[in-house]
Image (cartoon, rainbow, N blue to C red; front, side, top):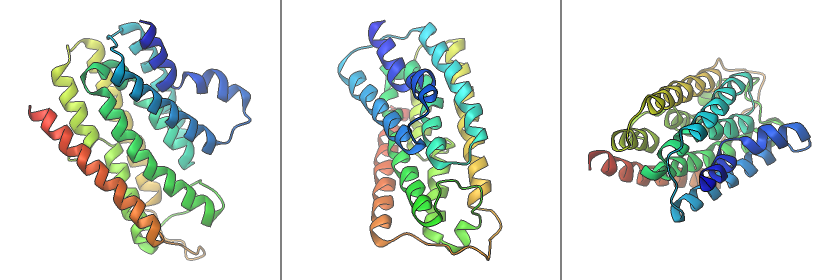
Length: 244
């Protein structure tokens, strides 16, 4: 129970909603980094210390996820979008941590590396990580548009990306209950809706002729291709687990 409470604090947005949001002194970028680091700590801890399913803590993380889902629909900032996604997916980690839930969260973190890099690109060249005012990305910056599309499809739990495989595999192997089905339904539709919302407002938007678009450098392309390669490796692991 004690370990589960620690995991809840690390990955379910509790520090954000109880502390960071109240302080209001940290930027969205810093909260993104802190939240990702806390989730990484939860993944490492769960790999070495055994934890057991606790319906109360899963319910708390689910409640936090629903709040995060609402907040994610209200933001157009890539950094906020990133850490809200971490909080939205926390119930899955809490529910299936004993059944490779840490691998699901790891693949989510890898995807977040790509989202973070895109947020930095927006911030550097457009003076803001806010994507609302920039459209037609895929028409003028094909690499950025392509990578962003792949990351959002990954977050929307489309196969053959790893998150969908890990979710499917864990659901089969776990002792299913009404709560587990609720978590899976909320996570699936939650991830899908907010990912498609961002996709529609950035990649397939109308081009703006008054904006100067800047595409990725060679180093940035290498970074994103590396992220996609790691996701491919995780997809292979997830596929083997799903058919095992």
